[in-house]
Image 1 (cartoon, rainbow, N blue to C red):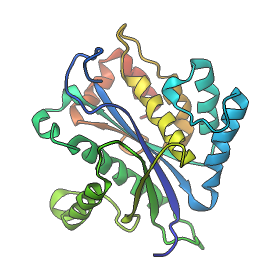
Image 2: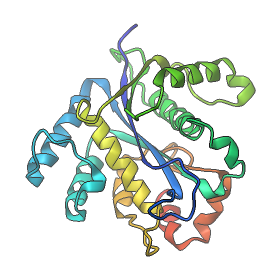
Image 3: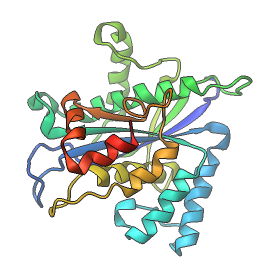
Length: 266
């Protein structure tokens, strides 16, 4: 294979369960899947970003960053570093209580794979839009998933191969000149620094939509990331920020905890 032009890191926040309301035994209402996209020639900047954050915060230089475990006052400079970096982000936010056919999505991997499909559609558009002349790569993307216990990435590759064969029938909008299933791998956070950045992005958006037990959300992190969220013709919604299912979009006008998204990610 020729060299890829982009590197894509994918991580998640929330869970895939359907036991509501959220409590110690229950499920999150939201499942968020995020991608961080870099150009391959500058991909090492993600390593430097994480190293710089760890040094600035006095963290162990070998310990992976986990956004959820950090203090609020440490998350802010981390997010600001991401917002200032030469990268782009795509997020898929799934509001599970709004899913009509929940039984179908209780099947193994079904929700995760579908979220991945929505994510990679938008990642492929982003990479297609950002191809440059004299690119040393072939326009495709290396896709690195955060390794999830129990998830079969071989099965995921087969899923996307089936989607490619049925693109016209199933309205699959992936640009297949960007997405090559042979370039899909999984890795641990300590192996790929970019996965730690994707974790921060996914969790930032999750905190922005998932209420605490007291009913509060924290949208500040996701709002800070607006400079690096993928936009097409000025629009983020449906591109860098994808809400699913469609019914949840109406909540932007009625749900106080989602007002920030209506205003920031139009």
